[in-house]
Structures are given as structure tokens and as C-alpha cells.
Image (tube, rainbow, N blue to C red; front, side):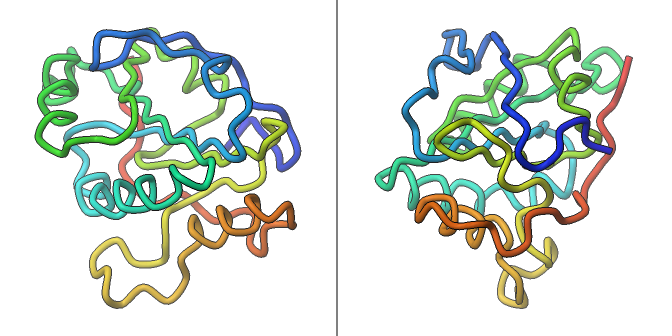
Length: 177
């Protein structure tokens, strides 16, 4: 269950990314929308939605939206989610967004994230406008009827209320230490 409610301000973070830089919330000030997506490497749900997230991020980058992925999984128990494997995944998928490592799991806990992938979409004032899943069918992109994230992005970028502000995140549980 998310700690953030619709309208709450984004919580700060300062985490290392697979590109060798550190990113914080300040890096996204001035964006019209920011999607903070809790993700990982090994989860089949992440793998199913990854290409869709990449397409959405690319499509909306020119419209003022930014994306950041954060992995908080315990890499000792789940070595597939190590920082080295995150780097390999980011290269393989050619991520158009930073992939951050939350080794201490403090950011994921502060946000109340529980799944991968789990999306927190913030508006231009960094207030939570949407929380939940990408769409309604991780298994078959062609069968998607509800494009929750895209609909939320469209609303946020137009300064309108998000039609469906919350959906249940669908995915693997975050692997806590």
C-alpha cells in the first residue's frame, strides 16, 4: 500500500544510476510530468511491460515528461537484480531514462512501493497525480483496453484531473532485506 496519496508531494531521492551519475528529485524540477517507476531486472512483469514503458517514455519526453526507474530489490538474495545486472539490462534495452539503485531500500519504503513495476506519476508541481500499473494487460499488449499510464500522462500534460488516478499495481513483490 502506497504511503503517498493523490495530491501528495514527491519524496526526494539521491541515488546512483547505471549511467554512472547520481540523480535526485531536483533533477526533474521544471518537468511537466515525472514518472517514478519502481522496477528491477528479474521480474517477468517488468520484462513484459519494459518495451511499453520505453515507448511511452520516448513518446512523452518531447512533451515535457520524464521517467526514472528505481530498483530496490535485495541483490544478495536475488543476484539477477545486482547493480551490474541493472547496468547490463539498461544497455540491452537502451533505456531512455535513468535506472537507479536503491540499495538501502529507504526510497522504496518511503514511497510505500510494494511491486515491480509500480508507477508514481507526478505533475508539474511534483504532486502525485497517478499511482498504479502501466495498463490492464501485461501478457498481451494487443489486448490492452485501458492504457492507465498514457491516459494519466495525457491528463497531467493538459493540466486536467487524471480519469483513473489509482489502479492496483500488478507485478512481483519488492524483495526486501
